[in-house]
Image (cartoon, rainbow, N blue to C red; front, side, top):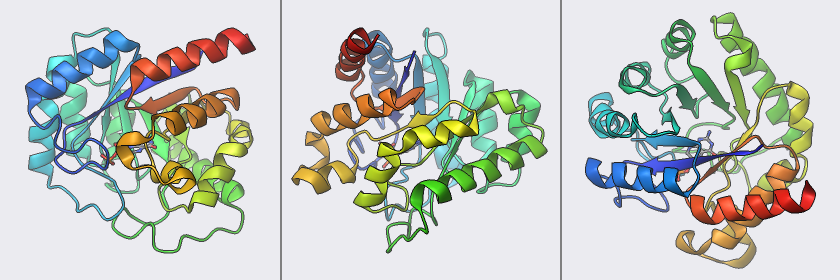
Length: 261
Ligand code: HH2
C-alpha cells in the first residue's frame, strides 16, 4: 500500500505555502487536518529548499519545528523531520519524530548519519544535484535515471557504513532538485528502475514547477498535475507520496488502487 506523507512547512518562504503555517498553533492544526484526511506520515520542515532559498540558522530552525512536532506527537501518524542538521534531527527525535528526511542524503552535516544510526531512526535519502541556491543552473546528466540510481546506491552504502540499518533507509529521486522538466518526466516515467535498489521509494511531485512547465500553472493551481504524477508514481512502485493536498490525493489513490487492484 502506498502511504501519504503530508507536508507541514513551518517556514515563511516555502514555494507553495510559505508563511501560512509559521505560527506553531496554525502548523499543528494543519498537521491534524492532514492526519484526518489520511496522512500516515507528517513531514515537518523549518527550512525551505526551493530553488534559490537561503539557508536557515540552527536556532531558528529548532524554534520553528520542535514545538510543532511536540504538538503533533500524540496524533496517530508517524512524524518525519525535513532537515539536514544533526542538532535539529536530534531535537525532533526527542520531541517524537521517528523519520529523518534529509534532502542532502546525509552529506550536509557529518554528525547526522551517526545520530540516525544511534537513535534507530528511519532515514530518507534524497537525490539533489548541487545545493538549493544553485541547483537549477543548467543541470546535466549522462542518463538521469542511471545517475540518480548510482547516487542513491552510493548514499545507501554510506548510510549503512555509518551504522544505519539498511532496512531503515528509504530512497527518493528528488523531483525538482537540480533537474530540468525533461529530467523530472524521465525519472517519473522510469521510476520502476529505482526499485532495483531494493528499498522503499519516496516521491515528491506536489505542486512542483515541472507541472507548471507543462501547462503554465502557478504553484497554487497544480493539484491536477500533482495527482496525475503521484498516481503514476504509485503505479510505478512509489511507496510514499509526499504531498500538500492529502484529502484529494487520498481519494485519487483509493480510486486508482480500486481499479488496479
Ligand atoms: N521536496 C521538497 C522538500 N522536501 N523531501 C523529500 N524527501 N522529497 C521531496 O521531493 C521534497 C522534500 C520541496 O517541497 P516543499 O517542502 O513544499 O517546499 P519548500 O522546500 O520550498 O519548503
